[in-house]
Image (cartoon, rainbow, N blue to C red; front, top):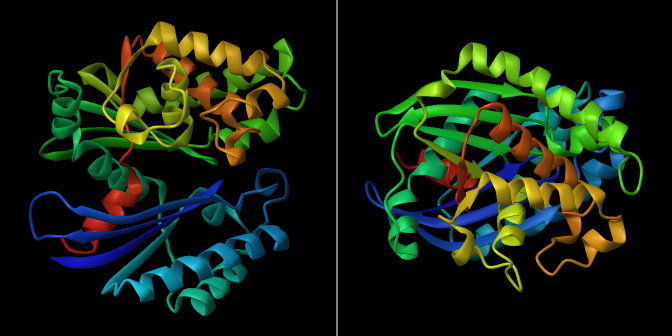
Length: 315
């Protein structure tokens, strides 16, 4: 058993998983944390990471590094994704990480990000189904990871990834591009939906989505939609992980979020404060994907790229 620290630095959030990972079999979670740092603030418009965004990320990363030291972590890997891939001043970010964490981040391409998400998301589907008293989801799986800057689509099965595509339709990016009003106007929502549908053309061209037997959705937008669809009184990761949410419920939740004011979204009991501004776009991505690809339900995973990063340190 090896104690590892996995750090996922996305466009919207910075997350930590400390886990004990055996050579084979399930890993044991020690600590899991998430803080919204909004590293990708404005990067879609400017092409650069804002100094204040890098500083927000540094403060949280310093806390994570201290936690890893205190818990006796043997191996650490930090993966940075969409925002840092796209930034002209990526070197400033990398230098900050080197100074704070003692090693450089892996700024991975979209396809590697997709593969890590797939491994993390599908590894516990059977145990999640058992916990819910349902059938094990059937392969092949289409894993959809809705991030802040990009969304990854990965088709695969127990043998591994068959095809993958990363497209720039994350919840932060779409919000900054289109959803400016409170609540968004019908025209703003339509422009965002058109953006999503245009991106899906390239996904369908590269990923044989029709082969998928199960849609697996992950990341904060999907889990928040699931919490709302399940009418949970508070966010409950155990209840959410492995839940099956029908497309009708996704449509209803997305419509409610997109027509709500910011204050109303913030008052929802399951809403993380850092997702209030971008959850409408994230829900829209999920709804459009399910409608466009004619998918009846989504199996929700609380496990994602963090778990894939942790496993990659040992296996």
